[in-house]
Image (cartoon, rainbow over all chains, first blue to last red; front, side):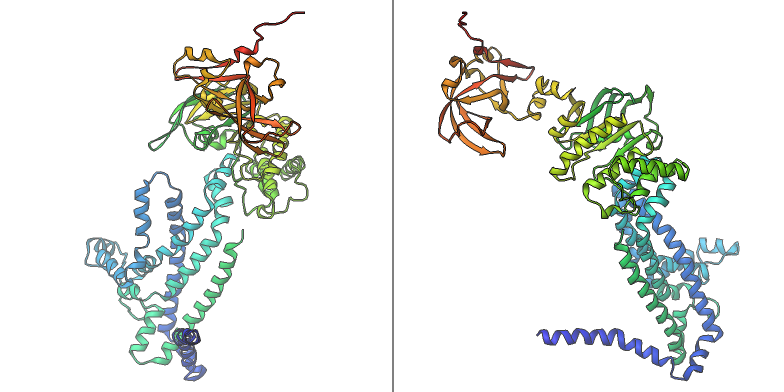
Length: 265
Length: 354
């Protein structure tokens, strides 16, 4: 039995993960180096990759800031009732259980051009849905739990005593945060950043719904790959995909390294 | 620092943790807050530090009300039960933390830290991280860190709870010496009576949020004011029918009076060992336990089991042996009152004058 199960496990691993990777890697070179270079230097590809890059940067910054703040409030905040905290804590996980497409749809329904809020923002010249802000919002929605779920357990584990010790030694809130709390949660935050980058890099469903997928305007790398495939432009799709894959693998290596560091100190 | 606390109260939700606590502490004294776990000792300590705010009552340092001062402004040092050392900093940086906050010069910080490293016997460990130290060393770092900014009051929450017995003994006398040398007013919390008796100038017994008694260890031991204090400090056996014991017949003058008898109030031996036989009771050995340096003897007297100790030098007793028991005194208490009664028969009824 065991003799059968072990190869089977490896087979599943191979078919699910390794073969597609190899396929993408080789598929990108099918038309030679020129084909690959053309695939990724097309204006729409350059624009899409830039769009993805921008979204990753903005989303990661926002998510880090608000994720760390929410974690601190949920773990340390005394002004919130414990019931309310529990409720908020479980709502944080909502994006995990809701399909990203539905998340995107919610944003369209609330902030779309036909809604009051959306119309108001559009009238002052600030387009949300089918524009960059909406795509950031959608990606933020999907990635929100990642940072909170990384930082909260670390905060709970380190407890309040070191912070209290700092306060009896004369340090006020801000100093205590930078000198005591931050160094202790740092590796958790870095882990959360890596996860956020990886997730926002590959986000498809929510962004597709919110962006409208307009080429050279609101198209991201993933939605471009989707469109290329739809148009039977497989070599180009592979080229863009290869870049995303290379980035993700690099991230995974960073993550492994940060995981190791997380245990130290 | 002179400390005065009046009418201190603290609730945690429905739980009344500290009930109307008042006390004063003289400058330079070392006070032990002693009591069972969950009795409110740590809450009192945390309120003094400003880490918890009282629901009612005043805390005065040097006659100045500090209730509204945050912990940063109170000039205190706090040693936590699990030390709460900054895990990501070296011993040196831990001790220097409070000085850096005060924006002292590098030179000043260096001098003060090295002075404390010397004082706490941590020389050579300055560049270690807390996880590279033993429990006792961490404890010393925690002391040094709390003392570095020269606080006027040192608060210690169960300072030895996490250290093994042998080193605890050493650290206790070390702490006593250190505090004496620095001359700082200190309050420490403990649930270990030996620790409190050995280290403190004065003890406050705290139970269920109230101060049961405050006094020197000797006073508390000799003159316990409540049954709780009597049973908590030292060992003792409870005797329901004390008036049946010889020498304590008068106890029947008070209704429902019970007695608490400490092992050291009891002497056992053969009849000829006692000069006044009329003061003694007959007893039978129930169990004996070897306690390293002496025997602990359980002896049955008129249906009560009394506990006492017997020197290893004396003749070894065996369970079932009939012996004679002399109870020197008992601590009597009923619902309203408590007092100490000496064995009436010990005064020789027919003294022979030569």
